[in-house]
Length: 202
Image (cartoon, rainbow, N blue to C red; front, side):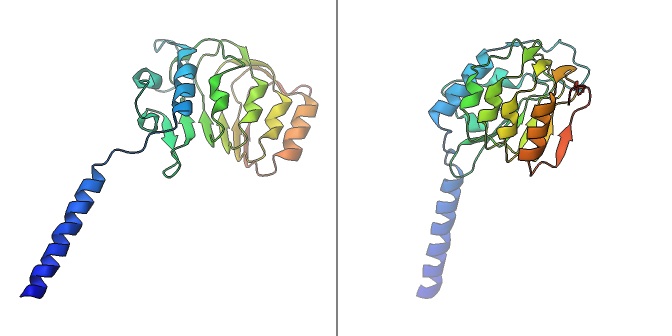
């Protein structure tokens, strides 16, 4: 009888621990990364009536971002389950409108592995060379986001890239020496999408 009571006690104790641990809040992302995200968001206005032919559905994801809350729970943000570093940012078709600053705090998110900015309106901003600082990236997508000018050589520094989508940015120019560096250095690249990019000098 005592054996059964002891077993029952341990079962109840285990259930108590399990139930309580499941209600514990998730660890927050590092404050500097949360700050970088909010500053990035504040760089743009939100205009969901803006028509982008490349978006089936647009949604203002960043409008729900609140300073002082856990950014790992923000719409479009994914964190590493152990370190809580921000590792993925999906802001595709998020109604972001405005020039893309070359000193954007986005480039402080050095743990980013996936970055999707497709279908926003960056007002024909140059594609900043600072994209090349995000050396952990495996996926970069700026499809149809109104970038212009020369694709920076620094893109060839992203040696871990598996997928690079620059399509539907009709004012982007892929110069020959940059294209050669990309082909030479991005040896893991499996998907390179360049529809609509000016390749005349490549």
